[in-house]
Length: 316
Image 1 (cartoon, rainbow, N blue to C red):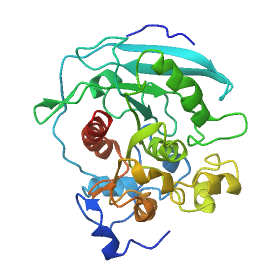
Image 2 (image 1 turned 180 degrees about the vertical axis):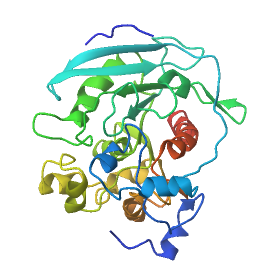
Image 3 (image 1 turned 90 degrees about the horizontal axis):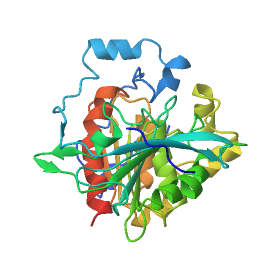
């Protein structure tokens, strides 16, 4: 347990959307296929809408402009592994500290969940964990907070027979981090994720609202039915009953006091699912709908704002 150092639901009705903070509206759009590394690889490997991504890219439909990220001098990072009883295997993780801090400094904690096919080494898109917590946005650094990434497998962060990544995060990973003064009360814990990890971040906040105090999801892989999920990724849920138990759309009640930020591209294949989720989120949630696909450029463009959102709510 000790670390080893190393460096198809209807679109929302208009009156509903007037109650929520929509930063860039755009309810139309055609579903796009993803070729974006680990996050979203299931859409390609199962042949959903073959060729659509290439067409979107040729037509500029996936183009997203964002400034080049700026970083303060990087802080310390540490990688290690532990045997997870919940997952019944060895689990790797990386913890990164913000600039000007060191292991042992009491800090809020962001748990960053990786996408399908990923692991703790590539949970973020286009940056490393110690870069993420060293971001400078509009000339201002993020509030000091640590970040941890961890191996969650390919089971969509929900419990499967012999593999429970949520239990691993709550009962094993978080205590390890709290042993390093990260996310220990009164400091707060938040979740963040991309694609499968975005769904996982929301689900974790729904299941453990007393532990997770803020959540930011980028292009979350939200299915609207078990049949839809099974057709694309048979391993996403163990059964129809498991889907019902872990459907992020129908279990948003516990988020009533949790700051939530969700961002998705209008040409993301999960766009209908995110719209269905947005209908159920508390009216205080921030929902960002803008141009983009389920691709790296969109993920990269949303990471700084997502981290800024978490910094605001974890350090207030």
